[in-house]
Image (cartoon, rainbow, N blue to C red; front, side):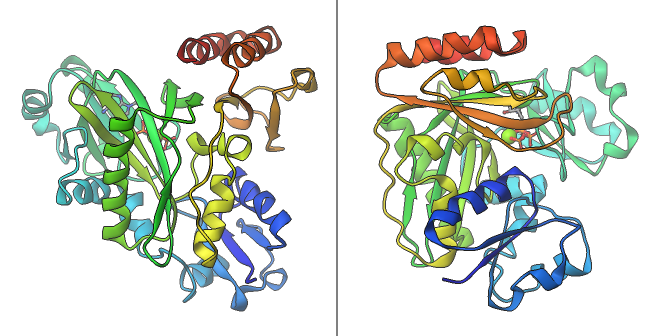
Length: 354
Ligand code: ATP
Ligand code: MG
């Protein structure tokens, strides 16, 4: 099987490499410090774990490689302006938005979008960074350089957030995991819950939206779509042309993980519908040091990224899967005293959902 070079060497690249190992497939995550001689570039298929990567001679060579899957899709989705334009072009429901080009537009923005405006950097934002929640009397707090570089969206008073992770093969076939329920706090994903069987109407709407997007782009691999649940149905928040944090539960809760699914898709291997037999909960470890006492809980799978621990930084996650909900809830509750206090509300949210 061909080796795979991955642009980016964060935790997603690491988990792609981990998923490839049992299959006997070589995956090489490529960061800025990579040694070109150590990579089998000519024979490789190229993919990415981030939408934008640092420019070096090596990343330029990989990005221009004829076997770079989805090459032209990355810049289109990495810019929120062109991403939103794609959703509008496909007539897919998304939070109402416009380009924020000039300060003089504010009165019109609030009269069109309502009292809460969410300003987002067109490129480079993540985990809630590069994002401002503004009311009409707060627009002065927005840095001047944002104008032209940001879009502004209607603040949605959503009932909840879900994401759909799916994959499309070279032959145009698609497969999807059940919808994942996500809790974000301060713009960062804290906890996810996925049931073996999602709400049928929501799942059907989400699959039809993500299928339309992947077919339009002729996309190959795993893509994630984040949505807001509203009384009128799902609104798309954003798309990620890669494996996604809200799909991490599939490592221990599905017959094929999102990481393996992505590799299968880009390598042209079989893409069967993954089987999900139990409920899964994923708890992101954010700015918290590893504690091997967590392993005393038999349901806990620890995924530690071996990154330096800094406040607000994703450094690992815990996956728990069980079809016995009282047992799953008990394991989650037992984790609460072993984690810093800020985890309690996210875990309580997950337990409540079961
Ligand atoms: P990610 O790390 O997922 O890439 P991000 O920083 O790129 O996140 P978004 O996903 O756009 O940014 O926003 C992060 C969170 O902020 C959302 O999951 C949601 O909770 C909240 N949010 C974003 N846009 C809106 C909106 N228009 N209305 C209400 N809440 C919003
Ligand atoms: Mg997001």
